[in-house]
Image (cartoon, rainbow, N blue to C red):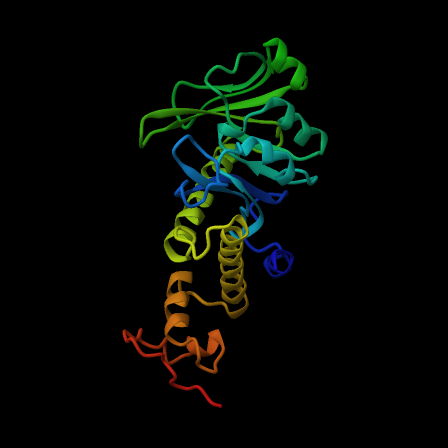
Length: 285
């Protein structure tokens, strides 16, 4: 279905020459006494959803499920392996050896630089005390391990957020995009946080019907499949309503013999039905 979504999306919404992919992970808490296989902390259990979100069309493209104790950086190579893509992730994913693997694969990354990331400036492209972009420069890592793991030149962009009066330092291996575009790419990372919030609030992945690892993983996979189906139907039907509204209507018209686009025709969507009885209106045997 992810492949079908890619075909449907095409180049629609594409902002850069290379496709944008947002990488992140979200922890789903579990009771350790009931889910003893889901080791996370001494007294807590959890599973972790590692996700690659299409940054242009905002559908889940690839997912990996693990127990909560698995660090997200260990799954980075499984999510960031294709050539010609732009990967954006937070600094929790900063592992110079794995970042260099992305460079070798002829892809790009945008992330935040670690506070203790020791480096020296090779060439300064731009510097200012005012404006959004404060510094744009090429650098080399100066620690022994950093220089060994990432021997190539990197680029840093220092961005000032006026709203919060805060500075951010972004790190990338892309020297073709403008400094503002690099900052915009990192801003788009927030979309994956919104996706995690939406799927937890609207699909059933916080309470589980079974306690086995297989049961929990199947329920999460099912939720991801539902999110993809909603995206596909919205794209094919050009629906302007939210995915949450579609879910509300489907719950009350589950046995209605109609298409999703038929439920949202020119007469408007049907009103939500609050009843303990199943909703059979329009169903034909």
